Image (cartoon, rainbow, N blue to C red; front, side):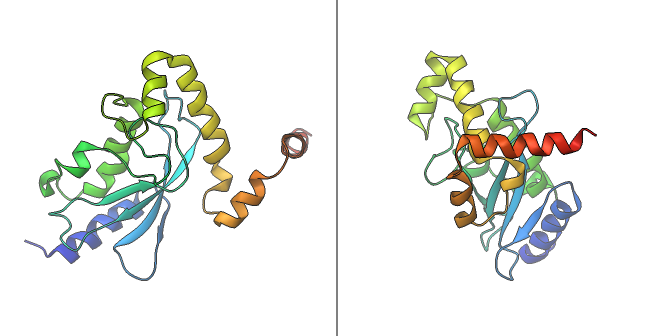
Length: 186
């Protein structure tokens, strides 16, 4: 049986060899960011979220800690901290999933969380209430957050850069979009 540090290295390498952008925090292999695309057939489609992953010393016997860095409107994600209420990761974690644990977080667990929110166990009460009582308004709010906080071109920007971009007026933002569209069409 391999040691936890070997397992951490193997799982991280499999994630890096997949279709995920992984950015290490510091020099170790215990903390890193992964860029995660919202699943198709969901109001999150088209958005990209940066997920912070921390692997405990006891990984794979103890689950990774994951959280959204950029804001997302979801009943099971705390809007301020980005922490995730995900039973499979937090309570039902098992090292027996094979060597694909980290990949499974991004290919199975997070897509299922976004596709099938559980408003009866919320970390964001406003999102849960809106989802239960006005699904169309909930999906509209999800799309507004996706447009404001999960643009693919903003991922990886420093927080200071993001805040200055957010201060642009809608007219400035729209005009830059039109210029890009104009250049793409000869």
